[in-house]
Amino acid sequence: MTVLQGSALAEGHRPVTLTAVPYYAWANREKGAMTGWVDEAPVKAPLPAK
Image (tube, rainbow, N blue to C red):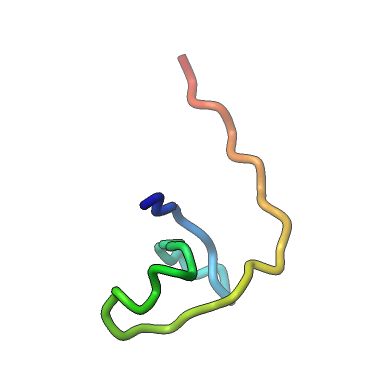
């Protein structure tokens, strides 16, 4: 199963961890909040310095 993990900024620019799992696998996870979609455009991250 593919799981996506990343970082985001919540309201008030508070850093949060983001974990996205396929909807069909949700019943196999522990209790927690679930959001159906992300309603903001992604921000392009800067490339790492060489």
